[in-house]
Length: 277
Ligand code: ARG
Image 1 (cartoon, rainbow, N blue to C red):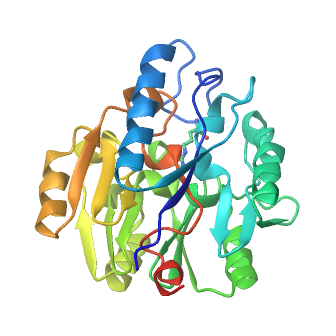
Image 2: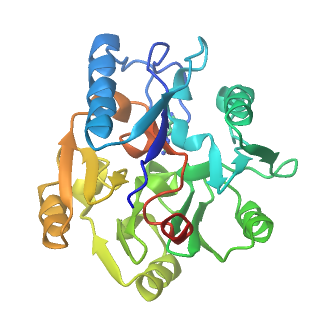
Image 3: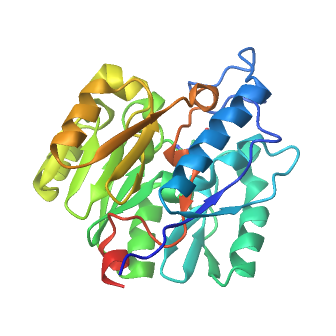
């Protein structure tokens, strides 16, 4: 029986570029609120069209990045491991996310003081293993702590390019043993770990990575991503996946795209704990 994918999104009512905490953000390049609303709605509707149940988090004025629900934390079964944001600009989101998860039946826990962690932006299951990006946002030592807490194997990967500051901007598991990645965002060791540990690893070119194509949402055999990655779309099709291109340019101004705008509450399709549950 196929379970309904369960996703959390937050409408972009108070979204905007109000500060600069990654190289994509520039306060002088404002987002167009109507266009952002339309683009967000198209992503939302595409997910509903694929059979997902989408929960809506109430937007909060003064928290423009709350739309990026991928950074809420990490879900493992009924445990919600809340993020500890690196920058003060986003720390106000934590109580909002914690309240939502507690009200929806999750056990809410935090990483120890001082251990930065940006949730599903940096920690992604592919099969049994948690692939964990660190340096710009999450700390390496937090990732070992997370592995111990969940009792899962963690493979820490250092991110080396500030434009790809979260793991989900340069790596996306699409099935328990398959993923797409942009090699230039990792060091030599990280690349060898990915190549050794993931059976089908699709390389994304620098140009297509730059259009945020690794920041994809996977629902069954559909991969929703920002428009502008024809080569990746062909590769995905060869593997039996359908690429669904969307316009998400307003969110790229903040350094986010399809994946960042969603949080998979029931575990990603590529996580074997979901498939096995
Ligand atoms: N402006 C946000 C930040 O810099 C964008 C977050 C994107 N989220 C993601 N999961 N990559 O924190």
